[in-house]
Image (cartoon, rainbow over all chains, first blue to last red; front, side, top):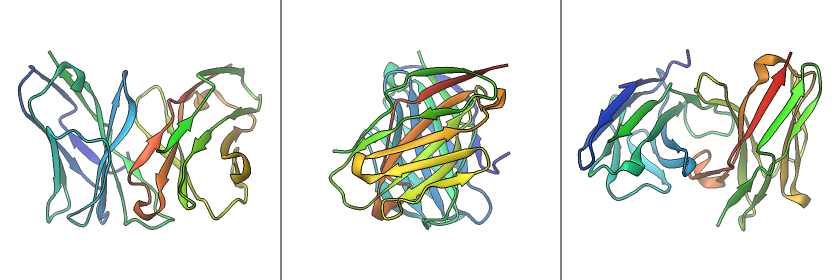
Length: 114
Length: 116
């Protein structure tokens, strides 16, 4: 158990809908990362937050948004869902952004868009 | 643009064999980070190592070792005396230096199967 929790584990929804994925980092970790893993695109970095502030942005679609709250949990919002958004979404956390910091991954949320 | 190439799509070895997973990267940055991650059949991702572009020393951790060669833009991963539990997909990744593990570019992964 990495100590990072993600809810829900599975999500099935329809095209055009909006969903929210939640990530709770390990206790004390300030940095949260979101990744998408799909058959078509492979593993992709989406976005990183550090202590509530956006730190880095990857290939995140405009339909997607994220935030990190004062209690450090993070949410990834996906809207106007398309079939191609079906994927495994991972979040990871680390203490900070230092070179010796290990990333710990959650179990992922599997999103299926029908 | 950054690019990571893992040319070996699948590798199959017999237990106790040594195996090397290749990773070649492209970047215009002079400073960057390189990573390896493991994804076992259960699906979770496991962080294995981060290496900064200043440090070309080889790294060894138990049966795992990493060889970073800036001259050839390679960051190869060797498992010595492989075990069935090493069966997994292994991803190599490259990130911008100032964002640490943020803004990473991943390779397509190498599926390693270790047979008993």
